[in-house]
Length: 374
Image (tube, rainbow, N blue to C red; front, side, top):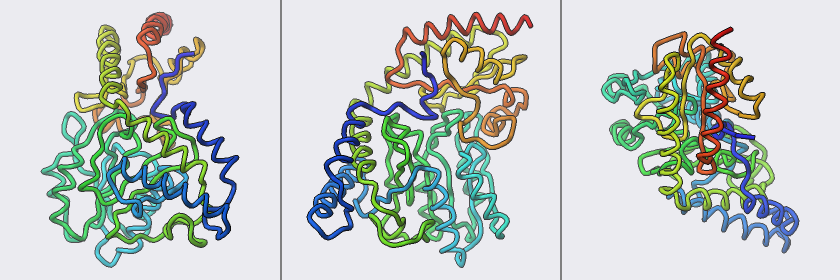
């Protein structure tokens, strides 16, 4: 099997799984219970939270646990807009966003909020001049991903954050799901950030919402105190401890891992570019972990299943994309409906080997010739 869909989800690291099992068996108390088992669990919860906070450069009190980035994105967007609607009703985002951002924004539009989509430069990055033009006194939220899940565009988050400092009524939310464990993340000029553990070899079912301490937010889930007052539910201690371990391991030797993936991406891109009917949709602003491409004349689903027959796994669009038959992200980048209809995504990992890429390229060559002839 050759797995090239790491941006959809990653296999859990063995050390992380060991932590999950150990905590599940040895820390059975609810960390909010007053007895000794609860106190023991609370100590581990607090040490895990401190480790996560230190790794992300934030304070422990700013860490909120969720079920994943989708819940975090909904909590931020709905929670901020509901609480601060007296300040304004304008939101800014991009056409590159994950469905868990676009869907709650569509919901809020029905509730009277106005959503603007900032223009993109040719490489897919946010046009900062247009962002400045869109910002008004009614803008209360700018929400975007630091790295787009489909095309891999790395946005200038720090520059955007500095621009928004001139708009004190406006909050800056960044979905860092596709960044953590791949590139350095600086949350200095970010108000709220969201991520999922299963994107960096952690367990599924847990995410993190970073909410800077000077900001309030309406909870999406009510029902009593958990690890914070902003998200109710029994603290999922095994998931929390496992996520702390996963994050530490993901950030270890980050530059070494990045350079490995970059070499694989360059090699792969050069080989695919030799085919006249292959168009590379990722740009120079894309991180090397994501390579989006289209094959004109071949349906993306057909090619995906052709590769799957050889136990090679890639994806078409995001695994959580909506009902559109084309990729909104690729359409925003290329302005070409045919390419967006045929787009596919290869997502690489530091675990990916050169041998796997060579095998992929061999099968790719066989299948593209076979399907082009039909």
